[in-house]
Image (cartoon, rainbow, N blue to C red; front, side, top):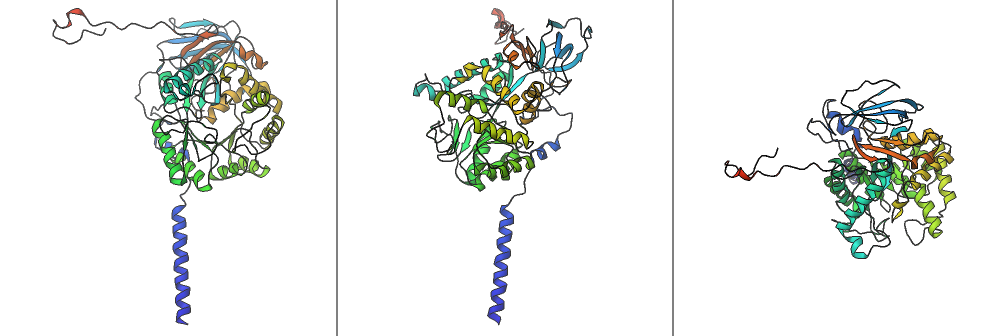
Length: 479
């Protein structure tokens, strides 16, 4: 009797201990918004999803810029209307009706003559340092070449009216350095929101494709086990990541660790995954799924229920199937794959009410096709049932929200950052008019003028005076 009772007690203690250990291992989910509740509305933060406090100093160029006499498509969902857009430094100040001249006398005024003003376009899926077919192995792995490739990519995007890109895997620290140089207006280009390295497992997507997995210079980072995936997220965050990109294959524990760590740091997580891995990612709380890769109807329903968004990227697979006839020799694409199957999947997601965004995923030398691939992706959305104005809203307002930048970008409203594209046509009527980019403004700076890259002449800095030594100073005055 005593033995039996002691056994039951011991069994109960062991069971209770196991439950406590399990409870301790299961961290409560943390919403990304939890981190931002400690800011007051007056605190100035960086213009990226990291929301780092910055000094309250003026940003953007001096003065007022007016785009007068255009059709204003503000991206809010309202129809285009006649008016003039007033920009002060790097912010949109107001939209005034036709004929109004409610701006300072010394403002710079650009006459538009009926052209259409839209919010800067956004591309949710880029790789700005990827090697091209002509590159040697040495060039492909060179950080110098990767940086120069990135600079050229940025030019193609900004000249296409795309003022923000989300880069979801590029070489080492290159995307972060390019982001900083663009933000300082030292090179022309769109805003860069960078993920850094793609986090995957041994022989997961990216690793099985032979991308450079060097922990310092590579575009991918191979991680093993939950702790390894947490560490990989922290490394990208330390480098400056604005979003975390992961890819199957992974375990449930690994994807849960990555998502919980990223959310605790305040970052969204997007996933290149397929089949049952998508469900695992959605259950773990991932924010977005990339690509039109197969998933069950039940997983689509779960995505809609949990608010998981999707960047379908139909265009890269259209290009792949047109070039090669299929997607071959990869362990991360073990399923039937076709243009029709992809489109049908995205149609299911639209019908389920899942938020869809626009990204192009232009690898190799495909960026040279721009703006064609971006416009083609938008036309796929029209085939899905969106109207042309609705697609423009997706490419601007919705994309900005998916970037976690909806409070700063995506619409032409007072207080928003001045990222503006001017089209010589009516893109809200005909998407092909998006190829007629006339003027592009990023952060209040004119980046493209008359359809081509605009680089103002540098302002020389005064040299040291010859008599500086005689005056008792090491260097002469700087102004």
